[in-house]
Image 1 (cartoon, one colour):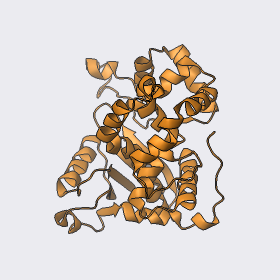
Image 2 (image 1 turned 135 degrees about the horizontal axis):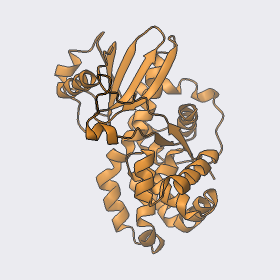
Image 3 (image 1 turned 120 degrees about the horizontal axis):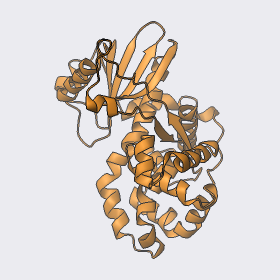
Image 4 (image 1 turned 120 degrees about the vertical axis):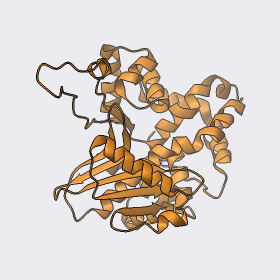
Length: 312
């Protein structure tokens, strides 16, 4: 459901703004996605943020408060989810909430359509033999679900704007821009990962997908794990960085699969800036490589899509 909505927003953003390339589309969508605004993507992102968001902070903050009924618990939880690892229990701790009031805030945000739960596929650790005790760290480990934002702009707000709200309200933007310059790629990575899953599943549209999403357990995190009805397993990693992905990244993914006991039918790597010549030589049945330009495939129906309504 959340990925369907994200795809609709992605297509709507393109239909409104027609960026010159897919790297720009993804980068600007990660900031303004879901707002339903027309954005001049020929302008620098920092300039657009100042003109459209920072200079209109009070008005946008009022609308964000209305979305959350000005609930301090909801606002703290959204900020914790945006800047943390998205795990529910750690977000509660970061926001100073317990399972009761944190659960109530999360339920409200889910009902409002601002977030959606991504359920863990980790299996509980069991003793190798009957009556055998688990190791202390295994016994204490809690399986935790994660949370996804349904509108990129809402996550952008709580990732970058909320932590600098006081300065921004006084029109002091230096702290914000320093954080944005340092962490923009890291921030965009999650949206890129979500879009990569959509593109992977689009390419598997002739197969029946049993489960798809990120995978995490106590020891390993995998960006995308997709399993189809014909017992095929696809493992994917996403790299939104300013350099080409090398063969070393492929080796890391293979090692992750060994740790989890996953035997992938194919490994897929999605990259912002492409791949080294050495890695490209290995592309084939066991390894598929996608760069930003390949996301054009998701826009094939853009001209037929209605422009979706704004978040506010």
